[in-house]
Image 1 (cartoon, helix red, strand yellow):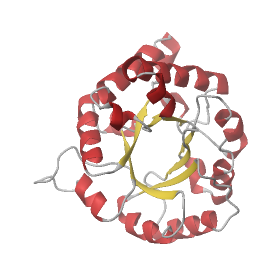
Image 2 (cartoon, helix red, strand yellow):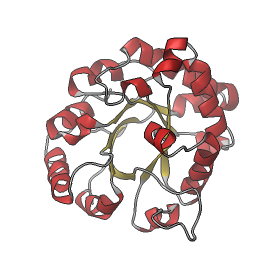
Image 3 (cartoon, one colour):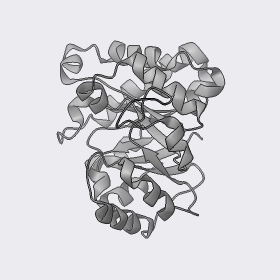
Image 4 (tube, helix red, strand yellow):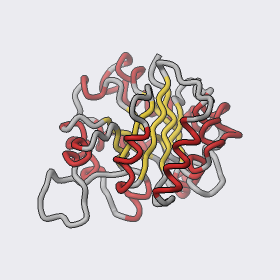
Length: 253
């Protein structure tokens, strides 16, 4: 069975004290993580080391950076490199979140560069894709997401693609309270898997974990995660509430 993943994306929220308390509440709860389940905390850069220490010795729970820069090193004030993340023991990195694409104009080509550096330094990527409302309303979401996948990922080798993690996030459902129906999520995530299979074959496509991201909460997680091609979620606002994210983790199939 491919990995089922509940990934928290705190974005630019919480003080260190608040974040520490949140992590303590979640890891102190009754989590039902088995060998196929993974929980990931995507926290702001200043908190990575602290949260990593909190999670020390715990199986199947990891820390993720929310971003990295597209260059190895140099005069890029304020940026963080893959090598820096690796040096402090970061496990995962989120690449291509819709907010990075929209607010910071990150293109598929730039994201491919970031992905290459992440993999070079042994970081596991959560590669995001998804469409805006006008694309969904025009009915062109499949071709739009397909382009994101091909331009961002199709340079990877079979080995690099095996067990890869993708997060599909309908932009129109992020932070809006709107959620794609479980059927809509299944439809496009199956399409993503088929796109991967067209390049890498069915076996590799079936190894890829495809998460759903877009107003996932405790009340709808089990239904969404129950779809055959939904392998968990990339969770924003609900991951900031211990009881919500605990329930979401326990909703993994």
